[in-house]
Image (cartoon, rainbow, N blue to C red; front, side, top):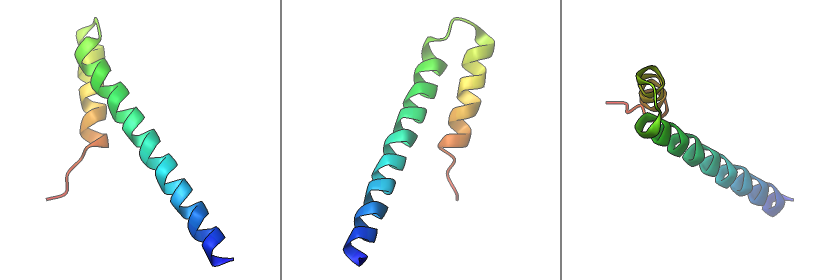
Length: 55
């Protein structure tokens, strides 16, 4: 029972990490390649939220 729970937890963790990486990559790409200044600015704000550092 417990190994199954651990496998599912590991799978969920890996999937979450992959989705987070995809979201950060998409926001970074948009921040660099968007045609309008407003979209680039919005993408940079999203990146600030996604990659927030606690000091």
